[in-house]
Length: 157
Image (cartoon, rainbow, N blue to C red; front, side):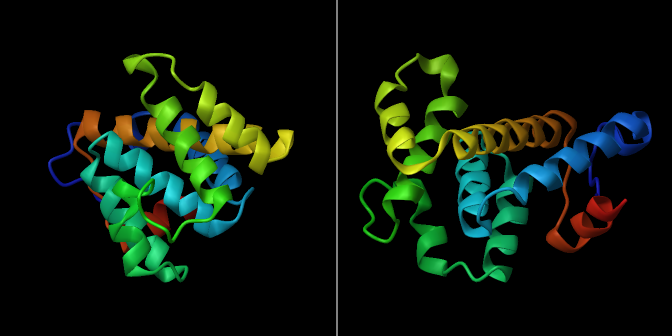
């Protein structure tokens, strides 16, 4: 991961744990459909104002076939007609969990989640939300910057 202005090289500072963290990240991301995973990563990163992750995951979403329209409208997903019920449930759950500090108002998001996802998928989605929120905190906290091309070697390591 390129670390322009990085405060610390997280992969050198704690290589064993970061390798495990990266492995879990990759495994969880592969557990649900790629388009859904990228929307969740982007939306969480928007909420957390993580430029690194917004940059990386919008590029990855495009590579996986996501449209410009759906990427641009993501911050206004409630009003945009281009998302499925399943995607809306995932985005609502993403926002509810990412904004926990703003109050526990996730009952509606939980109902939508239960209607669109199996229990196993609910756990997988919740893991993904936790993973991307964690990456947002690494990137914002330590000033990380990784373009999509730079992130691929780190994922392989």
